Amino acid sequence: MQKIEFTKMHGLGNDFVIIDKRSNEIEINDNLIQKLSDRRTGAGCDQLITINDPKKKDADISIDIFNPAGDKAEACGNGTRCVAKILFNENNEKEKLKIQSDAGTLIAKKVGDQISVNMGIVTTEWDRIPLSKEMNTLNVPIHVDGFDSGVAVNIGNPHVVFFGKSIEKINLNEIGPKIEQHHFFPNKTNVEFIEIVNSNKIKMKVWERGAGITLACGSGACAAVYAGWKKKLIENNAEVQLEKGSLHISIVNNEAIMTGPAEISY
Image 1 (spheres, rainbow, N blue to C red):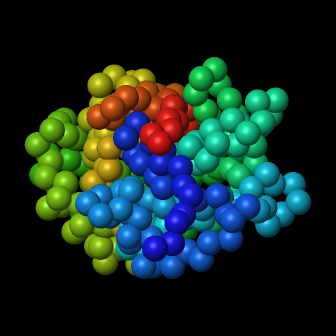
Image 2 (cartoon, rainbow, N blue to C red; image 1 turned 60 degrees about the vertical axis):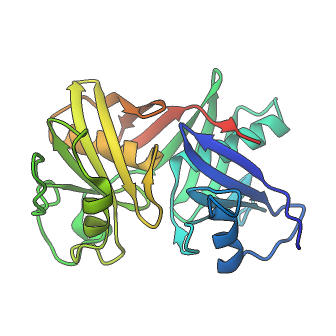
């Protein structure tokens, strides 16, 4: 059996197997991803992430993000914070990192004992999400009992956000895959259900594209705050409450800045 060194990490329960390919070239294939991701027979994770040498001179590293089935994800906020923690642990003097992903170059900074990541520009333009046809992205006509029409957002990856009075009764296992694979979304989509506590605090449940129910989603939290702000439901600076803690999201010049913890499991 092949021995592979990895670090298991999580951001508020959203967990990752992280393989550092800078010093050990390991072939990453669907079979390996599926074995490591399996929670009964492997390490178990929502995504597998590889740390790679940078593709551009001005970056510190590049990352690749894989869902349990083996398909790639463009962006992952919690995963990016976890990778940043590894690099900050390697060099305590560093205050800022440039991390290349398929969603672009992400800037990570230390904020006390937490990590902040600028996830880049957020957009609601229909063809950049992308949607299968032009429509009002602030009122995507998908009906979910107890929730408003969806808000379609792209933050390096696609999301649709629904606001309602209570997220406790939503059956994510039933509704999540139906919306993820809805014909409006040619590349499928992540799905967030939001309950507003006040103008600076929301609660969120998430169905991640390619992963299913996860305890947290950094890009989803960013998409939710941006969507709520665009709909004039909340401020552009909000706490997103998840099952194991909170992320803090600020929207500045249409860019989403996410701050939260990153922990090494083993």
